Image (cartoon, rainbow, N blue to C red; front, side, top):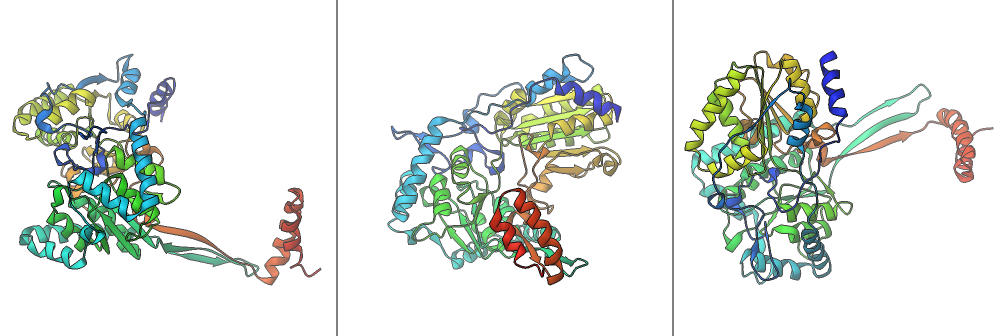
Length: 496
């Protein structure tokens, strides 16, 4: 593919764009708008003032939603693209220090520290962990209180996510070689997982389903949900989602203290094997800190969408698809690649018209003007080359014959094929997981799935005949490494 080499070679002349995630901002995976911040999803300054991670939509000054305009024919294109993808990676030392102190305190004092932080940051008045514990009856009751259409929507989404992930589940396998030695791989589920769910009035049940259902499908024994409830306000739709997704325990705690409780265990919350789920900078810092004590899914960056369009999709549709990710927060990224300048102009005109109707207009405009772009490509082959370099979280192939062009994509979290496949369907109910790699990490990582909740153990059962052949080989190699006991262990099983 000569075009691919031309494009890739020119990019390789430039320093790589940063890949990590900044602190102090909202994270895409949270799918939580700044308006829905809770006390546990931010942290207080020492002076007692709440330190949030992004402003409320009404506090953002509206901007012109002009996106950067790039052209692959321009000699400056590669440098402009690298600048577009570059993202500040520095971790905030103050955030790290606060999180380190909280984690150490929870590890040391357990429930007492957890209750203290929850009361301080969430404005609650819990006297014991019983006040912060949700029973199965309460999850069921929350579901029962919902209108019938919302119940049906939750069940439909959960069913589709479950159906997809059942097909993804890994199975054990083995074979016997010519000397009778059995070799294989045994697949087992994790014993327990913790899922972090952002809380508040505008919390997102989709995050519950996407994190809990794959664990439920593979048979994880304990699925423990933590969700902050600022001022003690519980969100029925989140609790109902926990009910339909198979959550076994739930606690109304959040922030770094909840992550620490799951990682180290307290008198009431058992230690889990892995923690998944979205959160802000403090939650992400806590997940990084406890990694190694427990597993984590990922530390996700701001939301991203890349649309490749051939001009066959109505401009209004593509404009709204770009808005759908830009509205997450002001540092989300929306990029459109097309082969026609007229089509790019049509989409821009549609965006200028439709933005007037968007409740989160200020956030969308900040996102588009700060990190958004349109790219004029020579052809769709070149557009796919650029997409592979960007390695986006969400990639829409809004083109004719999308399955053909999907074969050219090597790096993307999720690929949405065809004009009727809006990214938002994947967020809620299409079936595949919406927890996806961001910040170009789709080059080497994958969406959350059942494989994140399963382990692989190698199986080896050597026959007597096999021990004669393998023993001599192992003995020679072990002596070569001066590991005498290794060699002798193999030699003891030889007949001669």
